[in-house]
Image 1 (cartoon, helix red, strand yellow):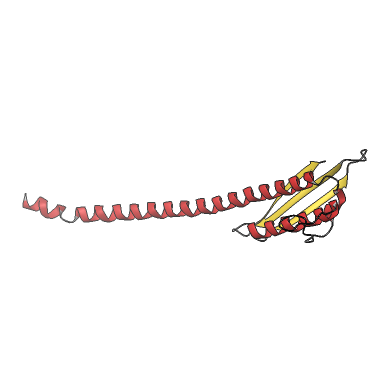
Image 2: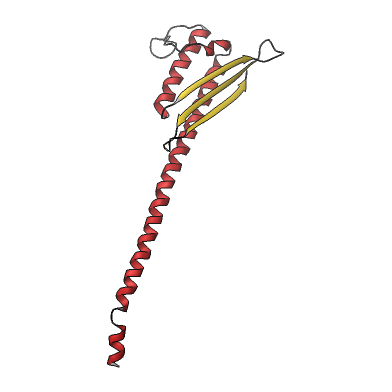
Length: 152
């Protein structure tokens, strides 16, 4: 019986070391999954913000229907709303909308870039087709783009 005891001595130490290695590998896998989840979650937030920002500009355009091609112009601070706002023409409101919207995009999205295209709809004297685009750089370095098309 004493010969059997000496042959089994140290076996539990090997089991404990193997269990520790298996546990360490599992914990590394969980940490990697957590990092991937954080990256994906951040990307999803940026995509959601881009959709909201493009929709916000579309709502601004719908509220200022008579500006039409003025949304192709340069952004300008015309003091069209807020404290001490003055009455603005549709073109001035469009320039003010562009300034506010571009400021929001650059503040919310990393390396955010905006673009708006307006073209008259063929065969209609009053309809215009709008394309609102928002681009940004993901944390992985890739550039993503969201485009919203609509007609008024």
